[in-house]
Length: 425
Image (cartoon, rainbow, N blue to C red; front, side, top):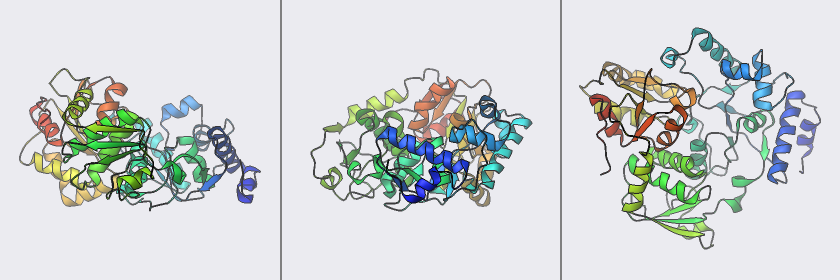
């Protein structure tokens, strides 16, 4: 790999052992990928908050040692310097205020808080969300980034036109300390053209519609780059967020194009870069039905124990919608309704009175984590209702529950009645 003088200085240890280890990790990573050089990044989003169980697995006695082993792959404890470039913490293991709901002990809660404080001392911004772009970290078109979290990467690549591959904990931690990642994949302009043409033949309007389309597209194209033709209504942030999250879950999509809407293509031809697509696929009523049935394949029992909304983390519009659907009503006594939003937006919900509306109705507004990442559910929960195709894909597998997928309205109605009555319109 060809390194600049500055990169060679990092590798030679002139900036300390931690930076040296980080650059060595990136060089080995890049060589395995076939990258010929590094690219500078000034926007990194990773995950460096560790639970007591993770630290015990690593046999790390302090936070610097845990960072060294779990984030930099160093068995030797290193002195970790302040991060070199602007960096943020993605979704973490704990709601800072409602940790008891997760079943955490006071000792675990304190250990995670200490891990958060260590990350903050390095200059890592504690956004603690899977949607940093909703709370201030908004990359610009053409900006090279190093981000984890598949739903976040597909959003910034596609909607904003930033450039990142889906990185891991180690490569993002190394990027925080060096400001570099290997120059490969979606950092290269030639890899950003569409490979598959999707002809959409049914209206795609609601958030549920976009989740179904995304899930089907991901299954069809795997980790390739689709371009959608036939979209007649301009989707908002929520719909694009759920489309990308679904496509990234079912197939590993990291970039897509919707001509005239996403950042890099005004026409189908421009998205394809003048090349013929590898395949032309049609999405009609039968494909929509197949996606819905696949997402509900784990569900059998209609008595719902938990309704979860906010994967990826909900924005203010989504929280407000739930508040309106709950107006004057109350969650069933044998069902929980949990809504997840970034901590920064939860503070806005507090000021707007949304948190009070939800609390009076028997719902909970949480942040910083989610049931899949934190791996927690209400005691005895067996059946979960979800308005997220991504969470319907992951949560049954991770937590061994049944998962119903439907609209936000279907989910709120299930929370109130305690019974799933949703369906495909």
